[in-house]
Image (tube, rainbow, N blue to C red; front, side):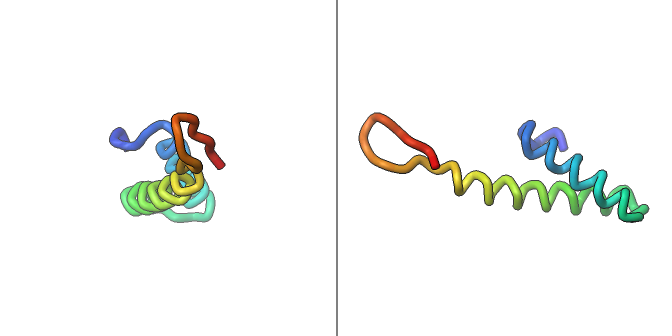
Length: 61
């Protein structure tokens, strides 16, 4: 998880805690799944933050 940025890492931890609360017991699988899901979440969020418009002033959605 060290390679993740802070918001993606926080989301991965949130997802991992949810998986553990649901009864998943294999910690390695939980971490792997939570990191993959958090990266997917990050990619989806990044798309919505792409700059729009032209010129020197950039506006975000």
